Length: 164
Length: 201
Image (cartoon, rainbow over all chains, first blue to last red; front, side, top):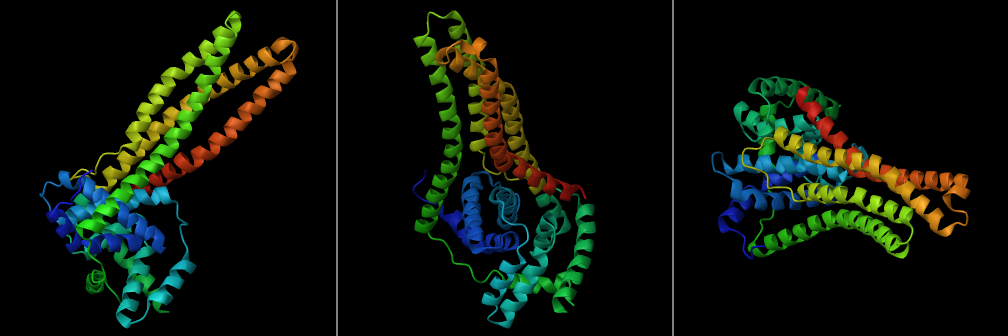
């Protein structure tokens, strides 16, 4: 193994580190699993960096690798599928200000979507175009557009429920 | 009410609380990960390899000790020969599964899931074939040899005992394998299928 990490790679990772954290937060309920999957994402990014052809932005590539890792890591870790109690405990501990409260509501709402829809909405919120989302996920552009329409409706109803 | 566009503003704020990596801690993370991933693979490898060694060890011992008895030697050799190609292919396929390649630049999420599923499924299919063919065969040979060598009257004189021993051996293997297959193969494959179904909905 190399004794040094490529400086450019490290800089790009640090600039886009939020991507890994956001994906981990959306797919894993507890802190230990999140930490574990973030480490695995970093490892996969480091291993795959040589194949990064710079045809797309680094952040798009990083999303792709991190999502691939999270979705297949999910199958390995066999976490309990829905643990609303754990999620609520986490919320209570985290909600120290209004901003964080809003953010938790947002993450909780997105977490209720299916795994694929979570990925799609995350890429959309990141500012990617329908074409870019289609390329990252492997869906058609039309499918992305139809799904986002449905996701919008689903999220609105989840948020409405949260506010009751 | 929140819309996706309003959510974008909140989403951007989720980036703020990350601690950056430096050379030292990133390198430590990579070393830890290499060790962990290698450990997972090696656990399965050694468990499987140890079983193969026990089988070969048993047949070799019996062959050498009972050289004069043609039936015993033939059965032991048959047992060994039946295992050899499977050991080779099992190790080769396991290597393919354990040493996964880095994620290629243009691999979409769907392609990645399909590739991972195919790798696991191929290995599992082979493992199932191997188990269906070899476990009953080796249980039968093993039980027969034990009765031939250690039980007065041999297999011919204790047909019921031999049948019971064979069935108990088979049932024990079945239970152990079923648990392992469920945990390491069936559950992950089910999750891959569920994910792929989401893509086709």
